[in-house]
Amino acid sequence: MRALTGGLAGPMLRLLGHDDRGAVAVLVAILLGGGVLLGMAALVVDVGQLYVERAQLQNGADAGALAVAKTCVHGPGPCTPGAAQLYANLNSADGTSAVNLVCGSANLGACPASTGKIYDCPPAPQPGINYVDVHTGTLTASGSTLLPPSFARTLLGQKNYGGSTVFACAQAEWGPPSAASGQALTISACEWDQATKNGTLFAPPPPYPPNPLPQPSADRVLKLHAAAGGGCTTEPAGADGPGLFGWTADPNSTCTTPIINGAFGGNTGGNASLACQQVMAADQANRTVVFLPIYVSVSGSQASETYTLKGFAAFVITGYNLPGFTASDWLNAANNCKGSTKCINGYFIHVLVQKPGPIGGPDLGADTIRLAG
Image 1: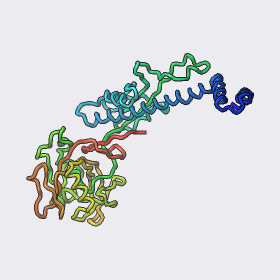
Image 2 (image 1 turned 120 degrees about the vertical axis):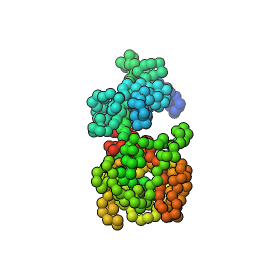
Image 3 (image 1 turned 135 degrees about the vertical axis):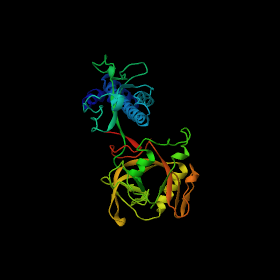
Image 4 (image 1 turned 45 degrees about the horizontal axis):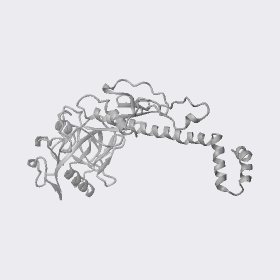
């Protein structure tokens, strides 16, 4: 560039004197004639279009993978790979993208090995983790799989350049979480088995409508410090502690229980914390799905109980009767606890819960979805 402007533009500028407008015109003419500006335009515009196309395809692959995973979670039939196309198109500026492959677990078919390229999906997760890969690519409204250039054909030797095909891929995993933070109360695996008939009986999840309201018979009464803990035939010995539910440790005063290495602490206090009163009041009024840790064993003294996690259940609180803290059961008023009986009422559902964390726990009704990689 220095030789170009010094050798050609110098004499012209001297002839033009101080006429800046003329100087600019001469410089533009020289740069156009030399192909410099066209080359810069090809670099900025055409490469920029490739980056935009890549972003749109990646967004479409992400949304498509999550959409297919949701069909796998919600059922009742097999996964629906066609759900990826709708979301791939919605994320494209011209309303169309190619979905070249949908593969993974369940009925989706085996995926090819990952190539490790930037536009490919990561390798398949470890065995036991459900997943789906969605591969997207360029598709124009005219049906071409090439993204046409704007300036590249004007460059020397590029007159036959027809464009480039851009690719993207996304992987989504789904299944029960193996670790997360749950509501600051817990029930035993035995009680969950009995309430759901070993995971075969769930109420329809909110919202209502469009889903039908659960039958009053789905409503359960979980009592605090009740005469429970007799064990069950569906779980190992020691899987049923005293009481149908118990408070858990709430170190951050947010009514949530951190699960660390598959274990969480107990709270033997008989009263709900202020944080739990506020959270539970909102959950009961709004029919919010809450995340309950289910324990399979309990050890330690009352002052330092430790629960061993089995998994997480999805629960809707319908009412409660706790010291200084009461709400009538909106599903089955006949289940209202009275007097000194401390209880929480509600029902279990099978639903997708938006909780981050690793996947791979037992299926107790709460599933989660996440993008991998």
